[in-house]
Image (cartoon, rainbow, N blue to C red):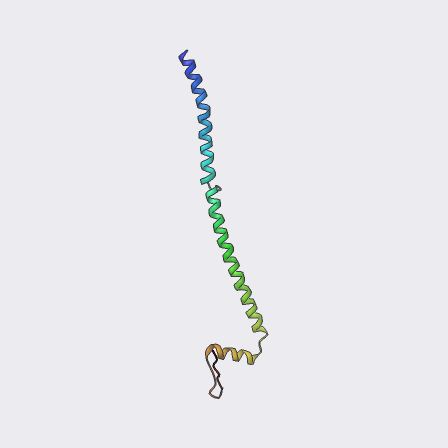
Length: 100
């Protein structure tokens, strides 16, 4: 009699325990695993950072394209004037006017 009641209580308590352990196992792996919540959050923040870097690089690329376009349309006198301005170079006969 005692054995039958013990078996019944063991069976009744074993089923919820198995389900609880299974639920804990699934919850743990849904958070920690390779495709879990923690990894997904980390990848999302990394993706946002990389998208910001990509936007900065696109702006820099467009700026360089515009600069190349301006250099293609530049005549030799304007190019010489720009080089003199950047290199602080002038002929002795040139008149230099500084303005702030």
